[in-house]
Length: 245
Image (cartoon, rainbow, N blue to C red; front, side, top):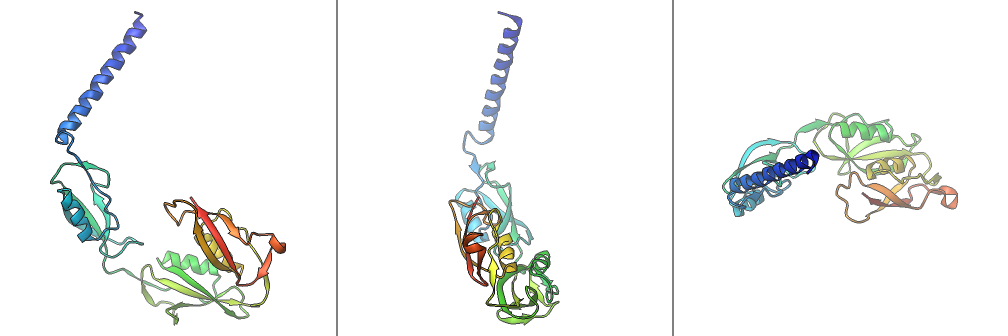
């Protein structure tokens, strides 16, 4: 047997012994294969998390709270150890819950801004754009006011973070023809802005297949397509979208 072949056989044999030893140690640490996988708890209420962990003979311990947008107040936003981690029975699982009282933010100045600028300012404050309401006005494609539940909001109004604000937008000619923009490759939020700036309305939103994160899904089809009927349709007409990961 050549020295090189002998070296590699010894090397592989040593690694095999190390792997077997590691698996044996892991098996012993986890009580001979009785390890428990920490379940997915994010988004669960505290009561649900305690129930799930209790059935697995694990203990829930609340240690912190923080604000996490998109999750219900007092729901779980993080666990330590995290989901998928292997632990022994009786292990404490430390939970961080979403704040019950959402932080308040002041409404930025929206009047006389473009839709794009108003959207950016709202997002920077942790607020969301809701419905886009068009009305005849010489200030074409300019934000006239912000509203909530049909009531006009003054700049500086304190709102819970995550609140949706409707925008009233001026439109010079409600009966005009407008060009259909190409939306392929955009996210839904980006398409909403493009449609609004083109004085068009968002129609049906369809998701193709499993979509893990709708905020990152991209448009793969639209109706009407740009260029059809010379690419012009009546203002405020609806554009339907299909999105996929």
